[in-house]
Image (tube, rainbow, N blue to C red; front, top):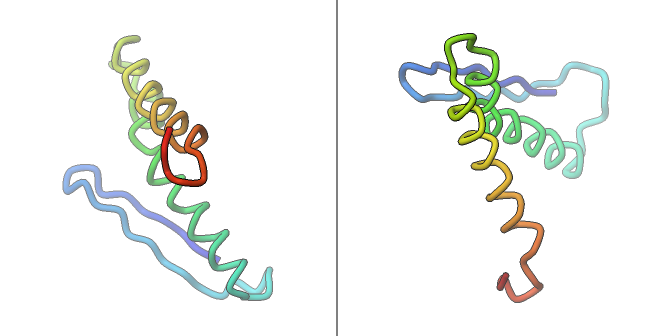
Length: 83
């Protein structure tokens, strides 16, 4: 239902929605598809660094911790938005 393409030089992501015929389009499926593609955007820097043979262990760990810290903050918030 969607795709995302990256232009690393410009730090841009192009997101496209479409009807690929495999699933009925509903508000829920659109939300799930948008989340799926946003997670690709969120993880892009980690994947890029991890796949680059020139990347150091420290660079990979820095990107990994960026992901962990954000998820930790999101998952430990209470219903009032406090951690």
